[in-house]
Amino acid sequence: MSTRLRTLVLALAALMLLAACNGGASPSASTPESAAASTEESAAASEPQQSEVELTLAHSYQEGQPQVECGANVIKEEAEAAGVGLTIEIFGASQLGGDADRIQSVIAGDIDMDIQGASALSAVYPPMSVVDGAFVFDDSAHVYNFFTSDASAALTQGFEDETGVHILGAWNTGARQFTANVPIRTPGDLQGLRMRFPPSPTFLLNAEAMGAEAVEVAFEELYLALQQGTVDGQENPITNIDAINLDEVQDYISLSSHQLSSNLVIIGEVWTELSPEQQETLEAAVEEAMVQEPECAAEAEEEILAGWRESGNMEIIEDVDREAFRELAEPFLRDNFEDAQLEVLEAIRSTAE
Image (tube, rainbow, N blue to C red; front, side, top):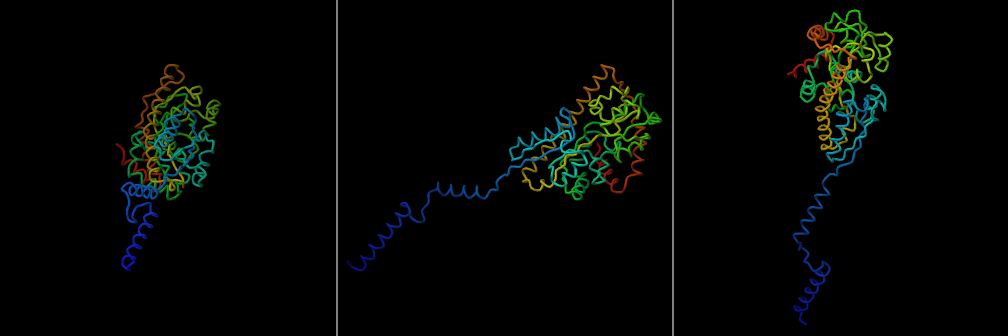
């Protein structure tokens, strides 16, 4: 065999052997289907997987209260329904500790989320106390406007910088009203009455601002204090008044609406571990609760007031001179707030309609 022919035969044999090893395809050949599959597999491998996260959410409220039915439960339902890997386990009725203990637990990372009042949070960040000031907010819409606007950024970011805890949102869960065994229509009607206020610097400052003689009594001890005459009256949202049956020991409720009771939804260090999609979902869930909870609270209040009107257990005083109380409270608070608190007050008032 000639050298040229031998070379050609060897080259053909080598090509046949290579084709057999590659399943009959040339080394560079690929089908459109195999190329597409390879691309899809590479893309899937490069996409980050959504991690499953279970969050604990604590609060101090009882089942059936608006803070639970239209607050905590709505957050859970909305977040879990979004399908982004979030589940929330709720611990209510102070199962995980009182307000002060739970704040520290959120800071430490032992509790993921909590629902707290502003005065409780002011224990770790004093400027937050302004949120619970008398006549600081006008109504529920004002609370929503502030906490969903850039005006709240200095307050919420300052709180986060100080504590490492992120504020997701806030709502008003009802205005605080006076009750006593006499009507309270004007600041003068408070004279001579020992009025129970919560043992909090902000609430006691509100009492002083409106000319009330404040007596500190824990909420759990309030019914007995009124029954025994340790105090003559008190102030609370209507749902709280009804929850502990104060209509049994008080004759009048005077609709002063002098302060809006606040709830803030907070989350600890786990916030930074959530994916952007999970963070957006949780924020949206809280905002939905910010809309629903005040509506539920208002409906509950109307039902309670209607029940008192029908039963006569508590006489409802509607012609309260709120402006007279406001005229006392506003300048007093401005004179007694620190500079940082005044900045918060101005930010809040800038969002009033």
